[in-house]
Length: 459
Image (cartoon, rainbow, N blue to C red; front, side):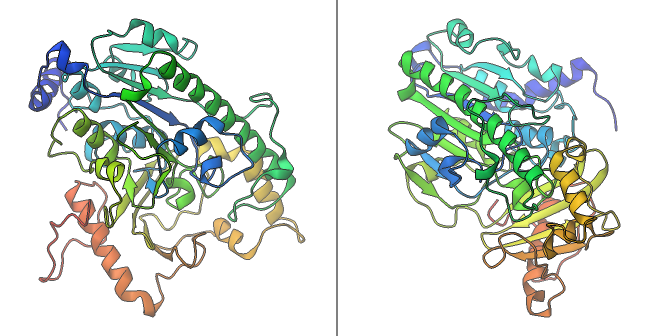
């Protein structure tokens, strides 16, 4: 592949972004809504009070959900940090823009939501973790480190321009240490997911995870109070989400719902009815398309998402038929792909000869150590479905009925009664891989004459 020098990259970026250039007068700019985007680090949807976990203290985010809309079926493009964050910035699957490998920098020639909004007059700022490389950081007008206080952005922003503020919290990423939040969470009250053994070590690990979630909640509350104090809340869309699932075995780094289902909350006074809840399938790639439409900009042809504005304004059935997710290199090359409908999921393990291996930051975790210790104990706490994680190999395909089996423990891929469903999901996944220029060989390279491999399946 030819490597672009910096001048070529900048020229290509400018040419791609020129489609969205639409200068506005200062008066027109002030009417555009501000956007505040908050994103947690390694945080599953289940672990907020407003998502049904009373054991974790999240009053600010719970209040935000009560003032806006809570998405109960929001999914990431990848269960890994930087690949999914690139989807939020580009509106594309990670493999489409070459960011599917963990720590891959955002390509300099690829447009992003940041400069698109800037060309519309937005002042763009970022705090803490963006995770797209130092070159990408220079796309922001304001870039703050971990210790810079939140008011500094609001002090420096031009008062006559709308703004886009991107805040990447480090919580609840590992490693965990005591003292992140006071009072600390009680391990006895932790809600142990079905995919983890219920041991003292796992409960203590979950309590520390909750402490970091509570800490990020308090920091999110600080930003929300600044908006109120400055009179900016009424004209500001605030969105909160997670970059991937919780950093525990069978979650982060996997394509099970525990790895790809994340919280997504939006508040926009006057445009979103308070207390709204939707179960419509949404994806990370939908976020930048939504922000562009808010700013009066058309969706670029390359973006694969859909605007969420219809879900802000009214209930909509069938917003999406499917969402897709991928995992590639983390601490090893273990490529997987998944297609999920509201009821079913198909996972394609492209290297089925590999056993499950937790990603690097989980290998030393107390929860994984407890998992292994229980497997060696004759009277251990592992239940039959826990042993699947310790199998020496994995199936090429996994098919789950999420209505009957929300934990994704009973693989139906070889069940003759589900053969037609499996084949349909195989086709849908292969179609998506073709359309989005996936480097991984799809399940099928040819299709029956009755099918149209170019359809988008609700994407």
